Structures are given as structure tokens and as C-alpha cells.
Image (tube, rainbow, N blue to C red):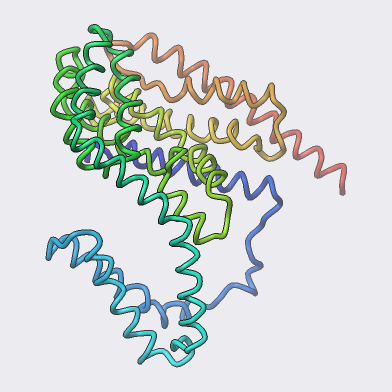
Length: 340
């Protein structure tokens, strides 16, 4: 439950950026008459529901490992594809094409897995992960911000070569107590490490999730990685915020939590405009900088121990964001009137 607000903010920022990117490139939805009928969609929904249910049962009821659970969800797909649906029944040429595409994807992802394995072995057998974590605490010298920044960097480095859970366990033992001693809430300290241990999946140069997506889409892997980083930019900011303002992880009064969430959600919208360079119209560099400042100000929650500071930052961000949003809306309206 503590992670629900950061999760919503992350997906909201991704949604805003994807939608604005679509508007920037002139992409629009299908006309109503071209949309598929809901009855036809529901008629084939079991093709997706059954494999998904198999995955959920394997993971959360049978407690299988993720790789075995994924295999368990593939088996119903094979069964359905071969025996049930006539229109989508597997054909020999489909299987050959699928094997060819899978081989190309393995050629792209395989070297990444090999290199990651080398790093895991190095970290595990030399004890460098333990030493690195210990040095981080020593380097911070009691300064919370330095400790947070160095912890984030170490989490990203270890996460590139280790799965997120082992990376978290290693750092939670050494760094989480140091964060708590400096006044960080226990939940915030551990969530901070969990988040940054997972971000290596979208952070270049490794960015395993982005590489896998690039293989499926036939896109440039590194470019996909940097795009993933931009789309997930909120995920890199929010952990620092909930360390200083626990209201974002449901630690505080209901009014503090609600106001922090609403202002942060608007901040995600404004910051997304700055990152994509679009809001109703394309934005120049100056407008993007103003939007970025407004978005960052709105992301700072209002809490009692720093009420005045949070209120000033939020009012500044809301004023800048609302003014520029209204300006862009009026500009678009005038352009549409002139075209008519």
C-alpha cells in the first residue's frame, strides 16, 4: 500500500508522455465506425485470460519461480493455438517464422545475459558488492543527500549485474540502517533501495527490459533504452521525495497525503510536457524549461514540518504551470480559428 502513490505517479507520467508524443507526431485514434465490436473482442478474450490466469496461479498460489511460471503460461497458448481457434490456429510457416524471430531476438539479448552473468559472478565471489556498500556509507559522512545519491548510483550499478531482489538484500543490510539512523522512515529507506535496484532494467547501458522490447519491436536497443529512461524519469525523482516527505508513501495525515498526491499528479503532467516538448503545440526551449521548473516545484509535497516551504513551491509551480498551459491552449485555439 505504501508504494501505491509512487506507482500511480509513474504510470501517469508514462501515459502523459506517450499521449503527448502521439499528439506531437499527429497520431489520432480510429474513427468510431472502424473500431471493432466489443462482442467480437470478448468472444476471443479467453485467449488472453487463460494464459494470464495460469501465470497468476503459478506465481502466487503454487509459488513457482518466474521462469517456470512463464513456461506454465505458454503451455495454454500452445494448446489454444493448435486445437481450439480455427482462425488463429498455428500453421507450419507461422512456427518457422516464429523460430526465426526468436533466434534474432536471442542474438540481441544473449550477449547481454552473458555479460550480466559475468558481473554477477564477479560481485558474488569477490565480495565487491559488500565492500562497495560499506564504502558508500563511509563516504557519506553523515550527510543524508550524499548518502542517497551514492546509494542510488550503487543500486543502479549492482542492479545491472544482479537481479533486483539480491541487490536489494545486499544493500538493505548495509545501507538501510544508515539511512534510518539519519532520520529516514524505515519504509522509505527500504523502498528507496528497492526502487533504484530495479531501475537498471530501463537505465543504459544495460537496460535489459529496454533491450528485450527493442528486440520485439525491431528498434535500436540503445535508443530504446534512453527513451525508456525519459519515460520513467518520474521514477528517478519520486524516491528522493518520499524520503524527505513520507506523505507520498501514506505516512502522514489524510489531508497531507491527498494534497501531496494531487499536486504531484499535476506536476507529472507539467513535467511530461517539458520532456516531450509538446502541449497542444510544440514547445520551444524556454517554455520547456519553465514547464520543467513548474513540474519539479509541484512534485514537492506539502507537509507540516515544512509546510511553508512546500506551500510556496507548490503555489509557484501551479501558477507557472497553469499560466503556460492556458497560454498554449489559447494559442492553439487562435491557430484553429485562423485555419477555418
